[in-house]
Length: 138
Image 1 (tube, rainbow, N blue to C red):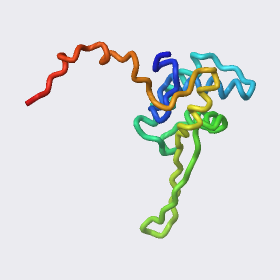
Image 2: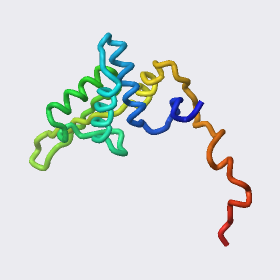
Image 3: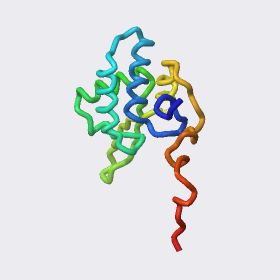
Image 4: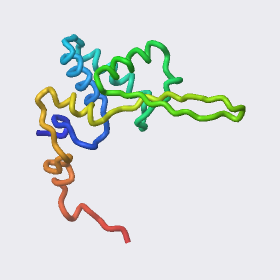
C-alpha cells in the first residue's frame, strides 16, 4: 500500500483527502456528487485556509459561505466566534470557520481505505540510495 492509498493521521488535509471526505459525507446523506465536483469544492474551500486551521467569515462571498455551510452539515467544518470590546465601548464579534481534521479523516476512510497511525517508511526513494551517497559536511 502506498502513502497515497492510505490516510495518515496528523498529516495535512490535502485536496484529495478533503474531496474523499466530501464525497463520502454526501453519500451518507443520500445525496449524489461526482468525484470532480467534490474535488472542485475541496480545492476551492482549502484555498481559503492555506496553512491555517481557521478562516475569518468576513472573507467569504455568499456563494462561498454556502459551500462552507454544506461542509458544516457534513461535520467537516465548524464555526466559532470571538467577542471584543472596541475603544468606544461597542461589542464586536468575529466569526471563524474551523477545519475539523479528525472528522475529515473519519469521513475519508469511509471508502474502505486503510487508516494508519504514521506514514509508511518502507519503499521510500531514500532506502534505495547507497550509504556512500550520504556525505557529512565538515
